[in-house]
Amino acid sequence: MTTTPSPRAAARKFTAGLTAWLASRGLDPASPALADTPRRVLGAWAELTAGYYDDPAVHLARVFPVEHSGQPIAVIGVPFTSLCEHHMLVFTGTADIAYLPKPGAPVVGLSKLPRVLDVYAKRLQTQEQITRQVTAALDEHLESLGAACIIRSEHGCLAHRGARKPGAQMVTSSYTGVFLDDPAARTELHTLFNARA
Image (tube, rainbow, N blue to C red; front, side):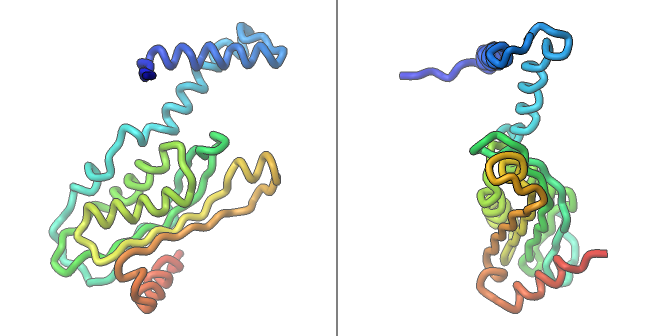
């Protein structure tokens, strides 16, 4: 039976391993340039994976009783950064997120849709998973008739290694409820997503 190391013990192992890796490349881990690098890398990865300690339900619990038009509510062009679970390289992009509240239902605060995106983006991830997780969270925690998320991003693993195609973007989408079942509602949603200044 294996036991999970404490965060402090895991951090020590991580920094020791990275120090050994630097040395194996013929570098001096004690040099002024590299002495703090293992600690900095650990801190960066901790920041990029902070979503494991966050819960979308907390963000989506903050709702307001307001009158709305019965049309989709959307936030478009939301920037995010995530860490690919296959190569642990960064991918960055933007998301368009929307939901359609049930008639008379309260609506969530404006900042909460981007916060839900960050809950999932700040984990070891694939873009396909983030897209689905965002709509699933909106469906679970809001009184909605449907949710949608479209993500466009550039992946470090495609841009800087392997195929080396910088500038290429991956596009994923997830639709639920009325946006999945009703082509007219989906067309209306795309019109809203494309209404950029």
